Length: 370
Image (cartoon, rainbow, N blue to C red; front, side, top):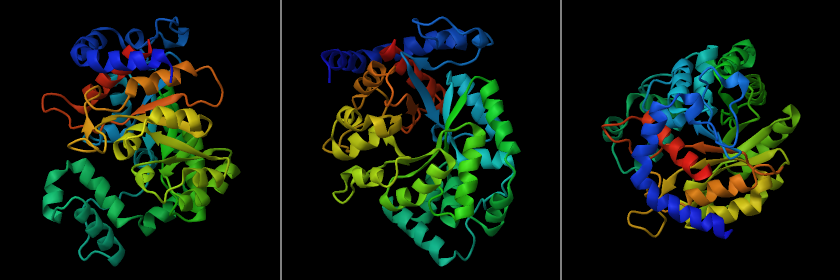
């Protein structure tokens, strides 16, 4: 890690707390196309229509749809959130794309009685959060609860049938709608490792129609073995996302990557640091040629009280500026990740909302990278 990176990291973490409001206000006043444009580059002629541009210093700052889980999640809404936050790249969750394309909806409430497998998933979730089902239900926003219901109930037979015969035209239309607004879809988050072969083929075809380079799945050896051959077949990537796997002594990322050259990492530097206390910069330097994208967030470390807790950017312990500057340093080199995606997980203040907070994160990244 260079002296420049170390120094910039300290400055951004200490000073940004005091300048966030100023940066956000400046972004709010300036037109989106100008406020998010790097000083080192003139605006491209096709970007004169007030398109967002969140690429700074060669690093494409994007967002994952999950950042707006507290808001209505239609494709049109997500597109507008990107515009309002000044975001020009997105990791689009499969639910958004599939809903747009006509997937039969998942149940909005849990069926009674629950099938045994669904009940086991529900029991594991409530145990993890040490809550009763009623307490958990009251603790989350309606869009989040609907996502949880879909996760617990799983894929319905009607949905499987639809996926196996779904035309790609609607996905192509959605990808074009985002591109026409100046926003690229670089990943489609389908997480299909547990699906049938036909459904996995569908997921890669849909992702390609959207314009994505690959699909994401939770990192693990079995998921990598399952999806790697399909990714090779489709000329795309199976991109493994981590939560707390690196804190598990039995987890071996080299084994995951060895399953296929088409298996890449969606490296979450916040979860990595929060669960291990290790510097994500060192990991990126070692595995950069197998990292497709980086999730950026701030957290406390595992030995802090409270441990591994999401924080407002600049108020936690993740060396975010060091990570961003490392990506900037190698932005023009092949084999280095170009995408750094905001995953907003810290509690949103009552006087704000998730779109404004994502915009503030964009301002943070811009300040570091320009």
